[in-house]
Image 1 (cartoon, rainbow, N blue to C red):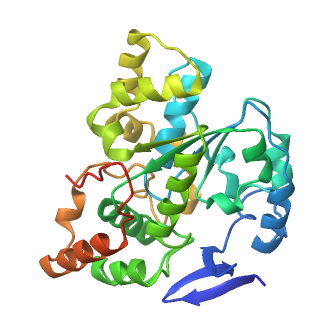
Image 2: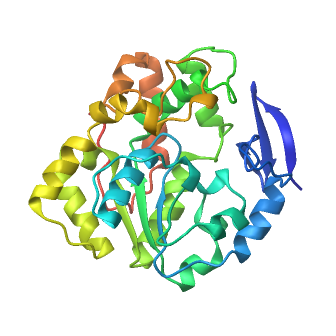
Length: 295
């Protein structure tokens, strides 16, 4: 049973299937929908997919919007930045997504079990983006703090960390999310895992690998141009094109805040960082065959 609005530790959210969800989706933009999360998920399971659909998946504030720009450029052969929010899966009803023209590039924060069943039978290409949990938490903290729709009382990063630990943030638990998606990555050849830190440190090499995964060959000149256009600094300059102004409390709000690796060091106390390290050691699946980079 879905609950459309519930106060969860000071943040107003919706509840469905034992998880918390943003309460203003999937009815946040015109045309308004009366669909709640239970109805949305039921319809999503039946939604037809197409063989040329491409998905990018991550937890919030882990590089979803950035990776969407990268994928769009690889799919179209055009390095012009574009407004991507209309292709954010949870913004739309399944009928609206179905009406979008091909090839579709769809962004989402949902778990594998919530994806349309057709994704797996059609073997849609899925790019999974993982960001280290410390930077993801800091970025999510600033996102919620700046959001008009999500805003809660700003009681500091350490309190937000407790919400992370208690699994009282939208989209559930970081470690569960990536463990379930990692298992799909290991068993499905149409799922590719890339870390945010890889993209930051080795953009050209990582994007070349993504292009090969998509079957979209590109030239070195195109890669060099992408590296410039997709830089965080350039994304910040294109805020008017890329951002959704009506979700922010003021003009300082943005999807592209810093994009740094290691910004968590500017936020955590020594005690909080030590606690976080202990949780990471306990929760990270020892079978994960990739390295999480923290600075």
